[in-house]
Length: 149
Image (cartoon, rainbow, N blue to C red):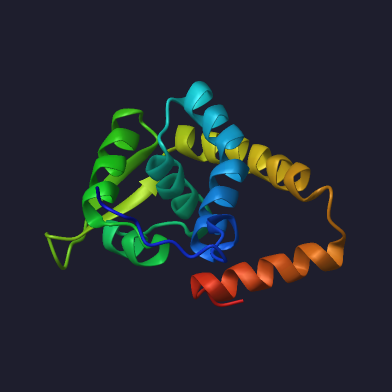
């Protein structure tokens, strides 16, 4: 019989990566359900749509860098959003290997609706915290994620 080494003082519920993962899942499940049921989108599609809505014209590579998502996932999301007619691709004149992504009129409408819903979900999620606590939480999470304030 194999014996497992244990440390009785180690509680996984206090292990920061585990706790952050649990918090991320708990805080996003309702919003994920919303955009999947309403728009048939997956998480990466939502993130691509939001980057284009927030920053305007981008390449898939630029979204990869900004969102820290693998290019294969971005490629699938772009294809799905294009099939839904939420975005279009435009080949760069100076480099035919490069495509610029743009939201369509429909994509901009969906972005606006999702932005409004995201703001409400965020406000509801933070409603039990003071403004100072929210500011601290956002600053600490951004620091852990390596994001600029």
